[in-house]
Image (cartoon, rainbow, N blue to C red; front, side, top):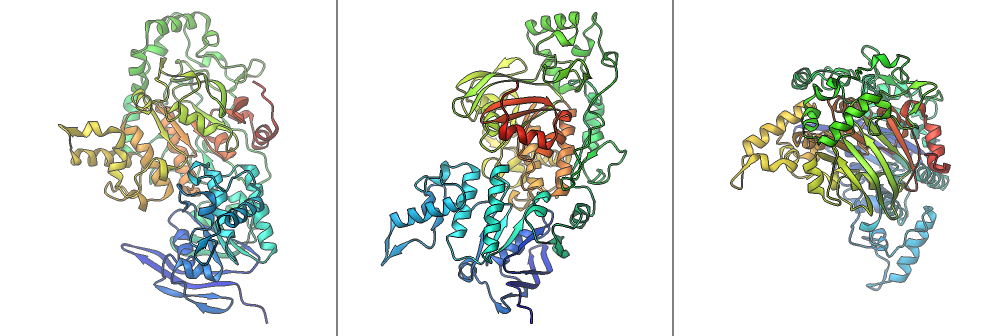
Length: 633
């Protein structure tokens, strides 16, 4: 007779006011296996693991442990049974030390007296087991990076006698080396008979680490017990979303940067109607796998096929296809996009004279508009459209000692520049320095040719810079407040008179902004904490669009966002660039950087080791550079 599964959940149902989160869900997990749980945001994954962790009580259904029915009345009851949960949103206490967090709730003590030294030694041993002996157990958790805090959370789970560990997006804050170390830990645990329930939106990880896959959709089981290594990606994504392609990126523009896809009036009309051209979002948007006219380029991250060349990558057209007239500057001064037209009117006479000189000699001779040697090989023709307008964002020898080396970078209106690198390579630190959250050791940040006061967030915001940070829930959103309060946060002055806030105007502006981004549900009174990851990110973007920002800094924009919502965010980001924003993007997912960005800078240990158009790179090349590369630029 076959042994009973370690865990069996049968007919689990859970309802909240107005929504049925789980509707008869079944799940079985064998000892020593990695069971992958997949589904879009809102599919019921978080509710199911909270039921398993004892945080929620099911309305109906049974839970059996080794064939014996049990009741998980609290997280303590689940922990005593041997079930540990590592949540995506880490539940650590930042002002306590690593050791205190690891043993929180089951302190190492004898007769009521804490054994501090013993606890510290055990914490250090757990950290060594996790491959991170460099983390000092005495360090305050709040001083650690997001990746370091993830390791501490794992150590806390392993400090118990666990038999089943639930890992919710454990690799979200880890770089490729650390992901490999995570997989080593999971393999060691399963070899000891420990079961792992692994939740991830990174589908390529499932094949590497998983044994079986179960898929949830709309609170129900769409598939159960699929073989992780042989089930086709298209089948998994189709089960999750009803569509087939995992990554669909909107097309890159072939026009010069600074020339919008549509006139200002057309763009405004389209934004009101929800139509965004190539970057359409909303109910009528082309979803993943539905490429519409065939413009969007897609890539299956599980396949062994190389990343397909973007059909917009290399233009063979002559320079005559770029509007250029040495006797006229209409293509600069008569820019139809109002986002840059206003900024161009404010430019100094010096910049205007430089624009005249650039037209006398062609765009390639102007230092602010010419493609860099890494961007342009004269033997093969231009690989990215030549910008016609000066850069909107300029970094001049920007540096922070110990974090990143001097960096020179121009980002033009309508351009997306990606920063690729490992966690700790200086990517996020660069964005935070540009946004004024960190003070540079040297160098300058210029917006529209005007230098910003260093280390000043208000100065950056006034200049039109908006940051969507890596940890949106901790750093960008007021989770208990409604959508309207979050959207208006950086523009409160627009809705106040004599110190009094006009809530009606604030709510109306938030509703218009979130509808424009296809927020679902479009309810400005809804608490942000109840939204999915993708919709929370839209709230952050709506805040900066209401502020009329011109430079958008995106740090891990799709972290914790499901496959279907990612494609919608990709289209939205491209649409915003098409409307004139300069976008600087950071992502740990190399396919995302290569699919979204026009140009890519690869960082290693704070140094730019390579610059190239995104279409001239592939994932393997980027990973080689970030792990072993020496500076080549």
